[in-house]
Image (cartoon, rainbow, N blue to C red; front, top):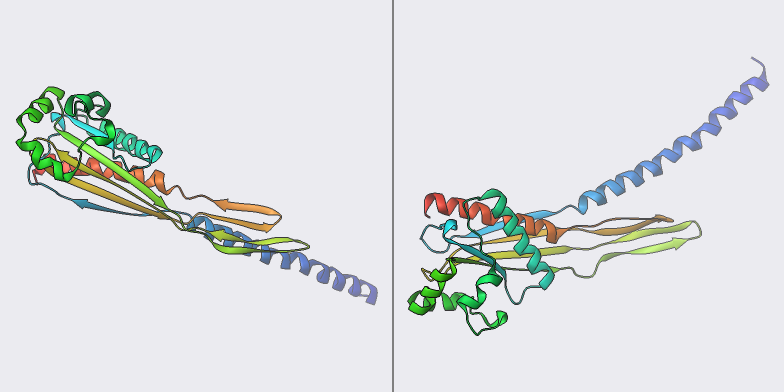
Length: 241
């Protein structure tokens, strides 16, 4: 083999190595993006409180309402989640819209002034006129729901050079939703569920390309709570605990 041919082959081998080295940053970018996408995923925790000892009869009439202090949008979302879960998973439950019975249960009181709290329940059970209104409204249980989301300032930063910008921000997003089942006849909290969901939404820049992943903590907390209320009602209706 003449020297020229050997030199050409040598140059060919050298010229291919930069393309091989380009694979490394692409792989690292893919690994980073995959890790951040997984980071944005949600983790959840659910807790139950059994409340009173009486069994729960969903067929006796059940109404769902958001508490006054809840965010209007999130409160209605939670009401919808719990309603959807019960309609699909507990067909024997008789659901009564709260706006149809509010004026019957609490005549003359505005929505925000309705005494739907633990301190009022015992008094309800001893008030004959209130019990008459409960029977006329055809509802025994009221499920009050509430929720909130906390999202502090993000961690991270951004650095730029002539070839682009690199960096990003990661948030911590925590949503908590809860529900209490009020037994208007027995004057007790029949049970409760709380769901907490945490996620890590992020936003980054790789060169000139923005990337990111949201974390829908409120959506998953709402879905989790709906399933939790469904499970609680099934258990209490079946066992009476």
